[in-house]
Length: 383
Image (cartoon, rainbow, N blue to C red; front, side, top):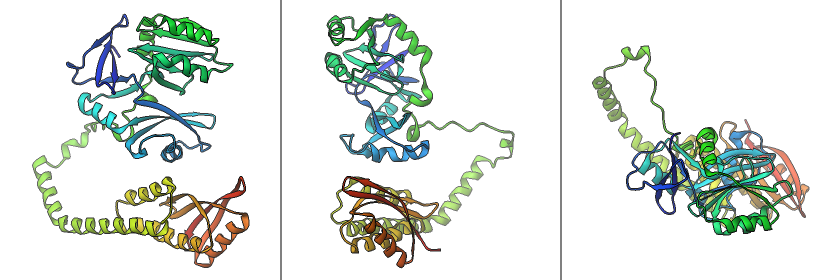
């Protein structure tokens, strides 16, 4: 990377960081930039306790686990998993509108977050003060962006016995008072030359795990031409064949789409009948996700809907049971229910009743949570 392009999405500005640490506004001239670095709180890092080990499962579970921490609707955010420290999973959270507007305007290959580009030291907090924003990095994933004038208040709360030093890079060159405030909190403050941070960012940018242009925003690479290319059908003939095939199947496609819409509509109505007083957002979201995931497919969604309907009706008939979460694994055609019940006997009663109605049921776990029992049931259709 030869230039460092700093973005403040909240201000809609792009500035280039010069070798001596000065910011040059290039908002009016910038068109296409290969790499952009976010420098404000429009990107945040959040963490949640996640004992799951497999990365694929963690990524699927993160939206539900982080739902209570995120102020706006979870679906409006792009969640980029960073990694784990012990059982704590970390992720970058960015409003989808921010990423989509950046892609539309600048079409970058890499969209990074400045706090995660600061040096990591075992006993020191790295801080960069740039354009009125303080980027803070405490360890590999624990980092944040805050207004520089409240930096001391924030660090006072996160100060620990192991994080005793601060390395500060002051690009604004007018924050001597901040250094004094941090020293008064008991930190050993070392003011570092800004040029060294610029070189560090250029030399150590890690795009493999920190690049927000990933997942649904990942750019598709063009396929490499092979020797088989000379046997390809000429473009004109291929296009003609596609038109014929499309025309022949258009009627069938329309019928399928209509059927898919009916399935989705009926499924959502069915949900409100099953859970008329349901207040747990995660259950509603998982239900909705399964309908969308099936693309309205009659076979795929039917397995989930029928299994949930048979199960929910029986459970409702057995008394007051609190629904905590539901998950459906299409490959196994297995429904996993997280229920909160009064005691083990009630959980066993649910299993017995569902088994009598032709379902295959296993109690995967039962854990005490206060005066209640949190149980996990795995339900399948027999045969």
